[in-house]
Amino acid sequence: MTFATPELLLVLPLFGALFVWRRRRHPPAQPSLIVNDLVVLAASSHRSWRLRLGRLPDVLRVLSVVALVVAVARPQRGIAVTLLPEEGIDIVLALDMSGSMSQPTGSARGNPTRLEAARTVIDAFVGSLQGNRVGLVIFQSRSLVMSPLTLDHDALRNTVKTVQPGLLPDGTAIGLGLAEALNLLRASDARSRVVVLLTDGQNNAGEIQPLQAGQLAKTLGIRVYTVGFVSQRGGGDVDEATLRRIATESGGTYHDAATQDELAKAYAAISTLERSHIGERRFTSYEEYAPWLMGAALGLLVVETTLRGTWLRRYA
Image (cartoon, one colour):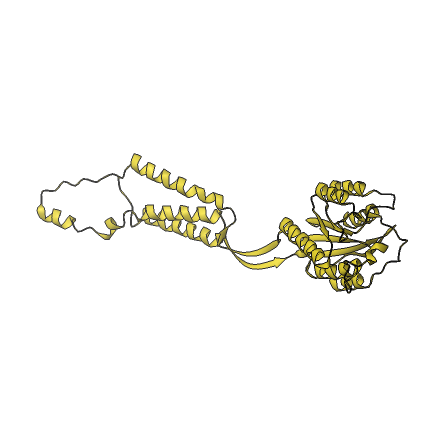
């Protein structure tokens, strides 16, 4: 059981302290009895039920006040939970499709190309985003939206598996790709808006520079996670400084990878970081106990008033 406004329970110790202070300041009168007959005195030593229950009205009043305070604090028990993930995270994947992505990830035979590795990792990444809208943008010398924000992950994954270079003139327009992804998220009212941008090169095309797009992301409050698919030689062909700056200034992080396994770890880290930002939104239906306690408090007050006016009436 939880309380909607638990801070109101602090009234209870204050009420208890006030009650004790009042009892000490105004103690109940002790009736005196003058008798000259020992038989009458002996009979009076057997207290009647009326005397025994003389404090009952005071007890009932205390209980009614306690019930009233607890009722105002709104005790409740959750009985149903509804997840609304479509209002959680909107993610756009920006994927570099330039010719260099067709290079193998390593020197050994059988290694997948960078594009093949990216497809496999992105497919698994999208599969882990159940309930969140995902979009896809590819870029070479220009950018192209391959999927708007959608909850149809199967369709998006099929697009990722089949997309090929050559739909656009070759080049690496990182700024344009990021700007296109931001445009998909501009009208989103999700609590968290994210771009995950993967590239293996440096910006060499497009009229929008990467840092300009990064500033736009910061202005729009959209986090950008950047991933540099570096070569085995140390990543000299990737502008890591720019990618790192875009990520840092927008509230995201930069990751690099040289193999498919490293790329998978990078996307897994991004997923963990983003979920730590957003948490899980829950709308819970509650069973409220306040009406029952209000009724109990009212009933106790009625009983107390009735007793004070009838059976346990006090005479001055």
